[in-house]
Image 1 (cartoon, rainbow, N blue to C red):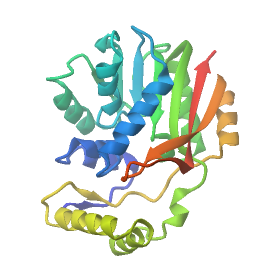
Image 2: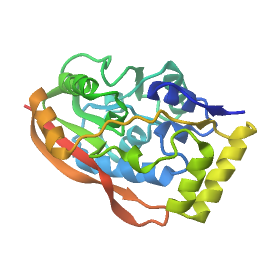
Image 3: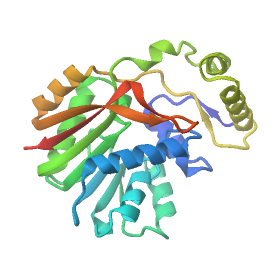
Image 4: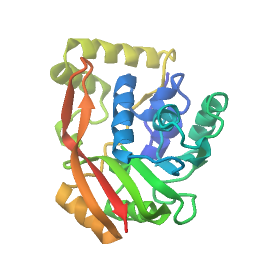
Length: 265
């Protein structure tokens, strides 16, 4: 049986690194279209220039880094670095990238302890990671790390920060059966049958591992998040709704998540 109950989100992604489909490391099971959409949104927000150094903290399956290599033209590949929390993820992504993208650098580190010197990057990305941190103290440690590794005048993109606890509307907790019924009620029969098949295939060990994730997410209203960013020292903080693409191709604003761009003065 390939069903797991990890104790924290780092362990979640350690397990995801074992999946047959490397896209599991993005955290968006079954939605490579959403990962591609979000990566394009981030790339547009970064406004990259030739030769700039980019660090993607929590780079998942490397989608954004590969997109930059394909579309950012004259950027040197050696200026792109991804950070992942576990050795298993680093090894999996390095083996995936080695043949086609040998210049990409993938390092092991946490968002609260990034293994890079001060003033390393012109552009720093942290997308879909802040909400996985334990509390505001960890969030501040993370923000200070982003500030530390960013060059003076450089830009940070901070994405998918929820303004409320998204789990309050998901009362299934750790019950797979209750979760499937919630999927049926909120997402319809097609998604219910897809997810049911996913559970059965995982149960018999013929698919990606099924992970019952810890029920804890960090959230912050934009007003408070802006205060934290300015407290750390960031300037020119800009806030916008996170945009998502639905399975039918419809682009919609997230009801709960926000993106932030800011500059290190």
